[in-house]
Image 1 (cartoon, one colour):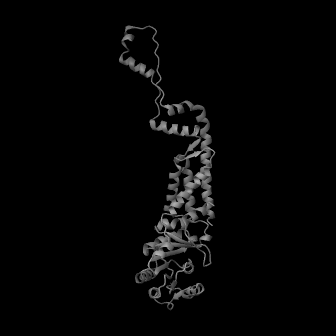
Image 2 (cartoon, rainbow, N blue to C red; image 1 turned 60 degrees about the vertical axis):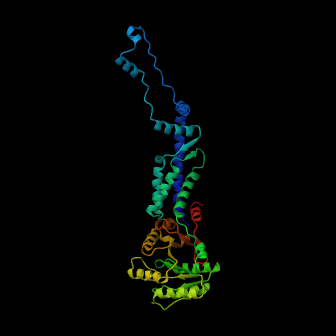
Image 3 (tube, helix red, strand yellow; image 1 turned 180 degrees about the vertical axis):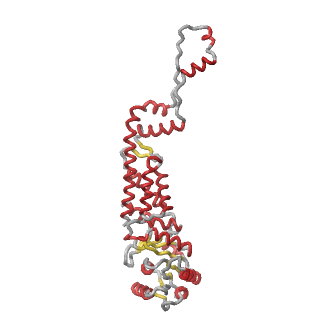
Length: 384
């Protein structure tokens, strides 16, 4: 899982590590041999101005009275000390030199890592991470590394890995929502509508969610709202029977809004805790089906709308999530087939792009293979 992204992140760590190590070796000798006195001066305070002694062979009256203006200029020119570097330059140089010689540390400049950061951004884009997300991660890594100090001989990889971990975690943890806590505290029944395109595992995900909620001692009813696709009602009916939950269905080709409405009314009448409504897979560009989805949401007033797509779809999943969120505002996403995802781009990008959290990850074909999303767990997988 995420093997391709792991390799690219590891390559970045090695590239930065090589840069730091080369910098330490290159700077060490010249500073120790030639800059010892200036370093002491910069630490103890500025040295006194050197005095140029003028030797006079035959003192004269003019000399005793003092040189003329032109002679003053000549003497000043002869005794002028070479111009010192600016305060800013002096402090910056002294700080780096002191860090390297006395504290055995290297301080990173932006120039030191600019090439590696460019390579990192390209690697993230190749891993199906959206452009804006890749830029945010690279900027965060740069801010953490530039100006940081690294002890010579210490673990360079650990310094770089921590910067990467922090950047990716902050992107993924920007929007976190605990569905379990929400259902626990919400008025019942809680109505959840699932949307997405065909073939992404939406119906199977609903079945997994029903099994999970039932195991948590909640009563569940499923609404077979996909009346458009042939065989969809029979498919979800098989899942409901296996799990042991109630299914509300109408005939194929019927009004999905009516099916969902009946399921909600059944839940209210029978004190059912959660209603899970399936809907027909559709693209946001299908005007008729999008109007139908809007009608479903208008008639039944769902508490949550969850977008379902495949993690392996990468940037396509990110784009679809953004488009659905614009058409029918979603409250969160579930990514299926995460266990088969070699890149991880969709999982990193969707929450950032939509501003809505990832709730669960599908990790297999079994009813129990639905894992609650944890940003820290996800980041740990990238660096295990």
